[in-house]
Image (cartoon, rainbow, N blue to C red; front, top):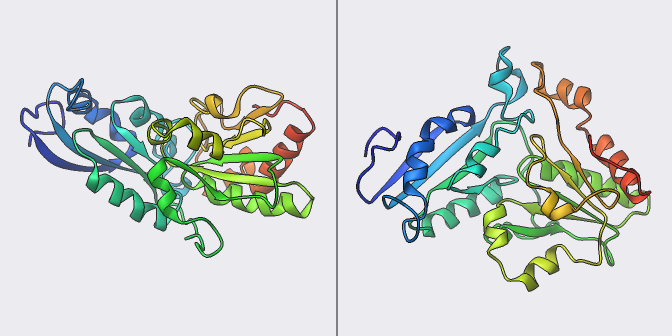
Length: 266
């Protein structure tokens, strides 16, 4: 089985669980595995479970880098593994179902220890939509004027913002984008149903790096991304949310700026 350092030399199933900051340690094994049918040196069905710590777990800013937006979801996204970042417990269950049927490529399952709600699926779309990578978790009543896109813990943030925007008369759609790779593998017709070309106002919310979101939101003044451009700080999570402008109110404010044609990036 090796030490997850690239020493695997046979076809195996392997499970690795680690805090996300340590993902780089398994990079050699992931690069060797690749896709066993095409570009992998060895055939490895490997699952990397990367857990993102929350802000109060330590005073070392490095320990916060996975729930605070220091881009720590990006090491696995930039490596060969298919990456899944579920929004709640329902999507976690569907992610495991997807993984158990996946063969010949590593999978990185990005989780969080942050206290996030389990979404009411009688109100929101079934979590099975995760199998398409991205899906409309909550739609507007009528054609959307704005699309909010997120993954992981940020999805519930967008859903709360959607409710607030509706009270102000803005029809917003929320898309849960658990996996770029799976979504990109879907037929164009499906992808245009989720992100219709007619709706140009789009805002992505990522408690991490903004890398990768431009392909879905476009450029200002139509597309915006809420993310961080700096390292962060050490403090309880709710304090950091307010400090960095990552609350529901901040998402609503940025969405309204986007609707007004103002640049929303930061």
